[in-house]
Image (cartoon, rainbow, N blue to C red):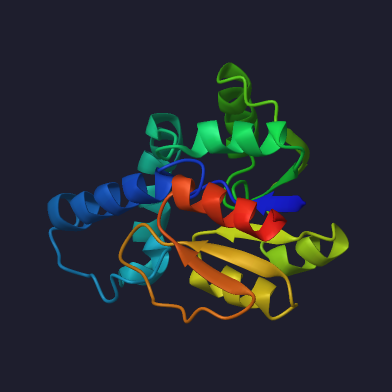
Length: 193
């Protein structure tokens, strides 16, 4: 199978890091309580910050968060197993949209951790559904309910990796809600058989 894989919140725990840093930034540095919706995945949508506050947060913390992020539990192991099982893995991520430097940093992190498992890389990709169609992806793994819905609307199976406060998404033949990489491996094996 061809499997599309997101990076932030799927392979790396960067979304959790963003949640921590954005809370601290709002409370300590801005001395405010600007949270409007904890279910939103992007910090820009969780807080009611002005443009300058968003830019300052990114300037101070974007690179730091990327460098401090760890692998999601089981992600590296399961991705290596999927590759060994003969699946094609394609990285499809929005990382690099806000700052192109993050692409090179991410490539170096993957290289340092010997993650030579992806056949193709799509960086700074907002329209993942289009890439999934172009690449004939069988399953897309993402932590964004909006992206999962968009890909599923193209009749492509998606795994919504739900690991933080976020919106609920009803399962159907194209959307499966899972909570960890062990469940992902089990589900893909069940589809294969």
